Length: 314
Ligand code: PSU
Ligand code: MN
Image (cartoon, rainbow, N blue to C red; front, side, top):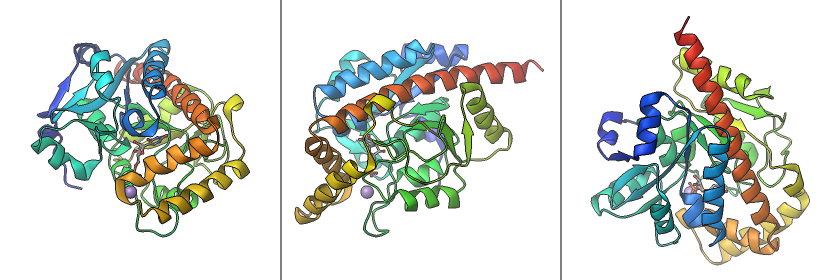
């Protein structure tokens, strides 16, 4: 992927709060907007976004929600702009959509791929989300652009693994092949989004933010280009067992195929069907893990800034 960060920066507007935080070297956590426009139903989407913003602040970091308005990238979406994201008419914006959305001056909700790219270009090194995109089930032809971007963007992504709708073993293998470390944060298995465990391994286990920060800092010292994934399991009280999830997923996948749904519509369709079939349990788990991940990301970003400061002073 050929990329000129200076060129992308020309299209970024940073809010006053995030801009001062960058100047002052404060910890900042990027948040994505696709989960708001396409991943959660209204009004839970806006409530969750606000809870994630609060959770980042509670961890003493500055939140930087990212989205695109009128073809301009906004880092640090304010509360009025947030309301604008409360619509599935806002285009889901992955890397391939960027030239179209910018040239037509459209609004766009950023995925893990575009949020990571814009956060990194803006100088933010930690990003919290629910689950990354990956390789879809039923063959290798639907692979999220999240994966190649993570392989080339040196930030820390806090997530609950990849979404359960995906082929988790294939996604896990892809990350390994492309050199993306997967670190369990308080767990020794790659989480399966709604469930804490998937039976798949992680590359290392950490239990406190300082250990996580050391790994991210070592990646930077080594000059490696890959993201580090910090995998945090869904909070205990909201966890759903794998058998339940796989039953709902079978139904959702069959419907997706029968209805001929393809491309960027696949992920939102599967997520919303699983939510309906679970009678709200999946939605509750999704919200709980998003807010928890925002909180953990805040703590990691604080530890990362402290580590950088002490390294500078040596
Ligand atoms: N995880 C969620 N809800 C979501 C997504 C992830 O809990 O809505 C979004 C993320 O923005 C992710 C995107 O980057 O789905 C992946 O979509 P695709 O498979 O089309 O690349
Ligand atoms: Mn896809």
